[in-house]
Figure (tube, rainbow over the protein chains, first blue to last red):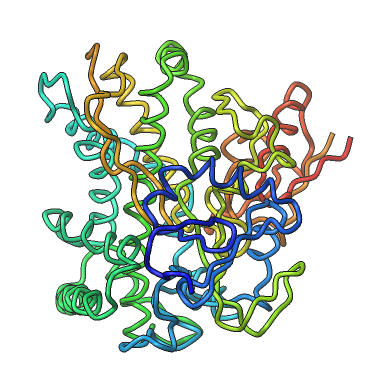
Length: 410
Length: 64
C-alpha cells in the first residue's frame, strides 16, 4: 500500500502535485512522464484518485468537455465536495461562482462579471498599477539585496484587487494567508483547515454586511445589486464570487510576475535585450506566460468514463495543467526554450474554453507594468545565489521567495 | 484579405485586439469581432496573420 501522504517515489502512478518537489522540478517531471507515450496521463490514489493529462490535446479536450467533467470544485483537496463537513453551496453555484459553476448557469454568472474586467475597463488602471510598482521599488531604498517576490511581486495584485472589491488594503497579509489556505495547504488535516475557513467566512460576512449598510462604488456593492434572470444573487453566490476574485486575483499574478523576474534574474542576455528594447517587453511577457504559466485547474469526473484508455471513476479529480499544455512540442516549436521574441504564441496560460480566466486583462496589465517598472528601475540585477529561491506548493506555481542582487538602479 | 472571428469560439482572451486593433475590436463583455466587415487594408496583412496565430481558441480565420 502506498503512503498517501508521504514523499513521491513514482510520478507516473503515485504523483502528488502538492509535494514541494513537484513545482521545484516541474519541467523535468513532465518531460519524464511524456516519454511514456502509451498514455500521457499520470495517475495517483492520493486525494481519493487524481489524473494528470499532460498534452495540449487532452487538456484542451477536458477543458471543453462539460458533459463528462464538472467544475464543482477546481482545487484538488483531500476531501471531495460531498465529504466536506461544511459542504460547498450546491450546484450550480458551488463555492466560487462562476469558476465552480457548469452550464447553463455558468454563462449567466460569468456574464455578470465580464464587463467589470473587459479590456476597456481595465486599461484605465495602468497609472495606478505603475504607481504601486514604483512605490514598492522606492521602499527598497538603496538595498543591494532585495527579495523580488516578497518585496515586490506579492504586493501588486493584492493592492489592486482589494481596491476593486472595496476591502481594506491593510488586510493584505490576511488575504495572502487565505490564498495559502485554499491553494497550498491541501495536504493539511481537514479539521485544521476547517477552522481557518470559518475565519475566512466570518471576515467575508462582516464585509458583505458593511457593504449592505454602506453601499459604495466597488465590486462588492455591484454584486449585491446585480441580478440573474430578474433575481438578486443568493448570499452564497455573492460571497463565493468575492472568494474567487480575491484568491484567483492574487497569487496567480504574483506568481506570473515572480516567474518572469526569476527568468530575467537568471538570463542576463534576455534581461539586457528587454532593457535596451522596451517594445519587445509585451511579446516577452506572453512568452513568460507560456513557459511559466502559473495556473493548473481541476475538474471532477461526473460519471465513470473511459478517457483514451484511462478508466476514470465518478468523483475522481482531473488536473488541468495548462502550463504543461503550453510546453507541448506538437503545438509549440522549441517548446522547452524560452524565446522572448516568439511571435506565434497561442498559449493557454489563462485556460481554454468557457472558463477562460475572467481577470486575464487585469493580470496582463499588472504583469506588463510590473516587468516594465522593474527593468526601468533595476536595469541590471541577478539572482542572489547565497540564498534560496522558494517555489509555491500546489496548483499555482511561482516563486514565493526570489532573492536578487541589484547591480544598477535608476 | 479578410479576417473573421468565430464568435461561438471566442472566449475573450483579447489577443487579436491587443495585436491588431486596426482589424479587431472588443465589446463590453470583452468578446472580439472584426472591424470593417473583416477587410484587411493593404500593409496590415502581417498583423492579421499574427492575430490568427495567437488566438488560443483557434477562433480566427483568414480568407485570402
